[in-house]
Length: 580
Image 1 (cartoon, rainbow, N blue to C red):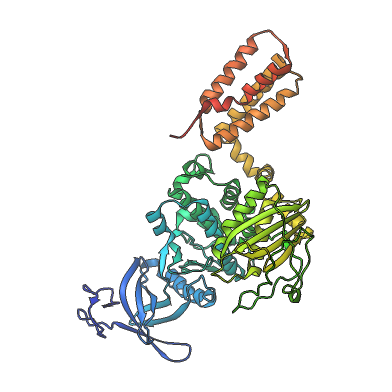
Image 2 (tube, rainbow, N blue to C red; image 1 turned 90 degrees about the horizontal axis):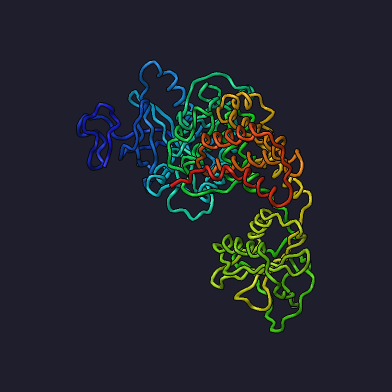
């Protein structure tokens, strides 16, 4: 099967391996010269895409014995935009040559002209894009979104370090490879036709507006794309995959805020929600400054590091077991082991089970899930000493285990749990729960890294993030334009009046706490459900007028005062409408 490259051919599909089109007589083969000065022949076999400036074909490289697949882009400039389109097409060819060394970016294979058309040949990525996955499998869950971030952010960091802005990140341009067993690196970022090379510093200059509008950052729509514009587009991609709602419908233009949480099919963690919120900030100063900054929050550097290098593994053997011993020795303190001392005749201490704690059980469950694919059948976690954990890894006898590769994974998970009271972690590897471990190692707290992680968590805390927004004049300009802002202010003022002048619970200062509690409950209710703000405001106003007309001043103490304050604080709950 061959496909004719002639745009005007009425019957472009040809049977067999002929060299000329049976309908129009045009050449069916494209020829180029490789870097080694060898002739390379390409044959188009299927049209897979068509746009305003060209067509995309699935093709094979005829000059190779196995005839590997490739993708050919045919450039068809038209109209007044032809000059800019030609520049972008040539730019994509150059970008793929420079960036194609990354395994998650298609390699640029050739760029040439033939019979009046320009052609770009690139690596064929066998897989489906995320838009197709969304259509076939439905909305993505939190784990899938985190996988996308972990897999794609290193790619963005790679291209940004080379001063390139992609400018067109969307689900259609992210392809998941077929038939790959790699746990990471399956997603490929394609279509660098809109990519821009940044030169002469980081100052944005007005240029051509490029990209898919629904996924494009505000500054990019003004022709001033910066590196964080790609992070914004990736954030929009994530909320679209979480909701299956067009991005324009996820943004409330009247309020100037994203409302993507209202369309979630399943709840997500506050951590992921905060990460996406920060990626979606309109102001570039309030977004993450780099892809690495997001990765640092998703995967912090582990607090726990090796005391000494673990067992040196032979790739062909995997491990060398310690000699069997039937007798179990009582618990003893952990021993730091060098490579040559891990295999000897001395038995390694066995631990007695301690009373499991809730957090210990959670750690055990998480490690069990994470390590199962590496051949670990069972994970046992015990707190055998006050500041020490012992983790026992029972392996599958049919699989070779490279225990050393598991240390960073365990370190990351322990870091995420923030178990500050644990100074050391003893690790034991066993086969089928046998009494004597075949491997051991230790982790210890790295105080410097732990402090850095605490600072990062503090800086990325959602409360601190919202607190920093109070410094921004744009934040207050936007707030005073919102009707809800004035309603909140009036309701808080009326509550403060009621509890400082009419009904005083313990002391007048308590009125401020009641008002703050009321606003906090209202904010939380409004995030999760639809709040009937008009009815709530009418109720508070009625109570304010009623108490205002009454000439009284009551001091309330004891449990009745606490109940009365609680009723006012929880009032927004009674005016929420739960989604059906």
